[in-house]
Image 1 (cartoon, protein in one colour):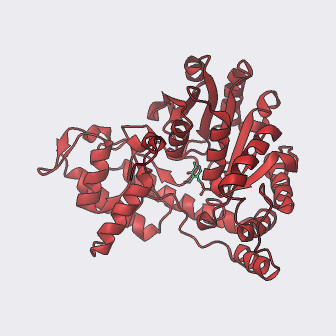
Image 2 (tube, helix red, strand yellow; image 1 turned 120 degrees about the vertical axis):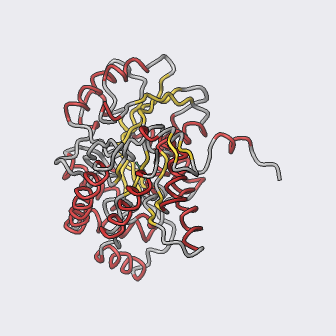
Image 3 (cartoon, protein in one colour; image 1 turned 135 degrees about the vertical axis):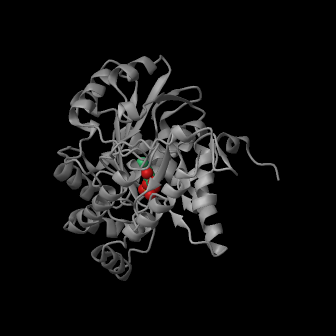
Length: 396
Ligand code: PLP
């Protein structure tokens, strides 16, 4: 069967591919340490599950409004005031099938063929694929370990051209764990002030998973707020990946455009998940912060443990749940059987020899690094690090 050419512009995310290879190894009876996927290893808090049960009993089993139930859009407005001191109206909010669909809606609504999107690297895999699908051009700005994986105002300004339509970033960042401070965001906002045609997509899905204090959003800067598309969701902070629910806060025209797309793609998000999400946002957040405490303990184990391996350089993540070590000092080395020449080779070497599954940094636009999720039990992480050390020490 001949498929549409647009499919050639994208590929399956490496994250999903590596998880698939891991499952295949497991099926063969191999004891795999899977650190590939970005998913909390906790169950959704019970009060949210109970709210979904109630929603079904109360008859919320029919099509929801395309942009989401008004009570949920209002709950999001309340959350943005409470947590972020940001003022929005419900008309500026749209709920979609995961933050991933929010991003797809937004990018397809903004980017015309040939438009440029600036994406600091490393970046979350999906951004670039969606820009390509919209026939836009990705302009990657390398921000390595020396920059703590963050873009500077000078680098941003140097990348801007007449065709720049979009800037996309996440803070806390997947994969690097970098968190932008208020001052850093203010400096970037200062650059955007000079370029009124650029829309800023700020992916804040790891907001609650922050180890350094308060989350800061670039939407707080009034001069650019009407061009900021704030993306957030329920997958990470509430351990609700399978519920598929995310949201956007942004300009009304864009919300309307996304509503139009969504009305043809999905007819809105899942009604039961939406009702439960109202409870998630408005109830006590202690279960979320308990998860964050567990992530922090694991981070405090895995980062020094990886750093202690000869040849590994690592930046301490300030948010999210990923270790993103620079393993480029091993390139060109071999264990006698396999040669590791790049990050893809390293991911496959570790999979084949240590049965530890990470994701090549190349998938995130950084050829020097590899990503390991630490959303896994302490025992899994301890065994993972032991195997990693053995496999890396074997490279000469
Ligand atoms: N944005 C970032 C930075 C992510 O890491 C992910 C999931 O891995 C998403 C968005 C997608 O989230 P959702 O599950 O809500 O689609």
